[in-house]
Image 1 (cartoon, rainbow, N blue to C red):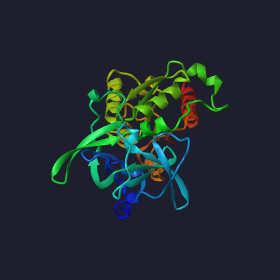
Image 2 (image 1 turned 60 degrees about the horizontal axis):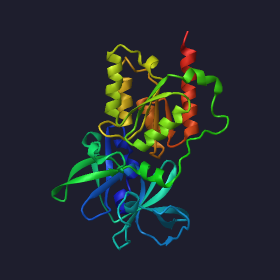
Image 3 (image 1 turned 90 degrees about the vertical axis):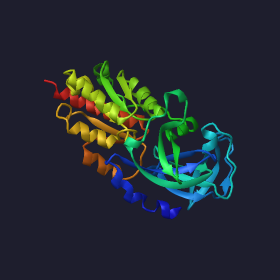
Image 4 (image 1 turned 120 degrees about the horizontal axis):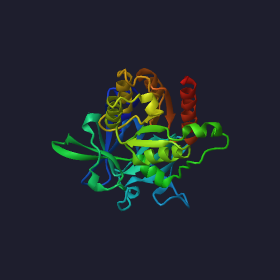
Amino acid sequence: MTQMLASVDQRTKLVGENRLELLLFRISVTQLFAINVFKVKEVVKVPPLSSMPGSHSSIIGVANLRGLSIPVIDLRKAIGFRPSAIHPESNLIVTEYNRSVQGFLVDKVEHIVNLTWGDIMPPPKTVGRDNYLTAITRIEYQDKQELVSIIDVEKVLAEIIHYDIRLSDGVLDEQLLPHMQGRKVLIADDSATARRQVRETLEQLGLEVIEVSDGLLALNQLKKWCDEGKVITDHILMLITDAEMPEMDGYKLTYEVRNDKRMADLFITLNTSLSGSFNNAMVEKVGCNRFISKFQPDLLVEVVQDRLREALMAKP
């Protein structure tokens, strides 16, 4: 398993090419699930776990990995199945999301597959709003077609860890508030939980938030406004985009925006739970204005306020 993930750091070349690699695993015998390899630090056999009294019911203990204490989440239980039983093939997927490290207990890690974001589809609307998926895909695996469900880890974590959208004292510039009223911000993120966190943070400023669930929808919306004769930098204050999304990732979205002269000057912030120094390099490469590691409401508001100050100064 270590060998499987040994080249994760080299895999960053896929980012920006609208490609991704998924780590496939099972939490039931019949169905494959997946998360993005970029969010995986390592995969190990389940180590001894220490109990954590008073913790969330989905946290089954704490693992000590090379001196680092990591909360272990029973992923199967967290998404609504019966609790897992640890057996010889069980694995711990150690991940880094939103600047925190945690382990997910799964029945068995299977394989890594390389796909394009065009292969990834939103979950069917019939599954309802409370599902734990950001997307689905179909792959040829072990001589048969299998459905793969991509877990919305941000939703899982938000139900276990409380994310506070309240702003710290001194962050909000009261003089800017009158200028915020009625201004629009476009958000592109495939996680409904992540969109809600950003929306509820920005609504405190009086901003109108327009949400879409993938990069292609965002690009089509921007083009529609341009086709209607709107000046994009007047119509919306900025675009806030996730990195990983079905149909088109945030890097590709930024590239397309920058290469359309009608919206090339749009202010774009990459807001992602992906970790790693490659993000800063990719932001510079594709032309994002700012990068925010989720979820930091204070920093998000500071970026929006900086953008508004810039917009006000640009007005004659």
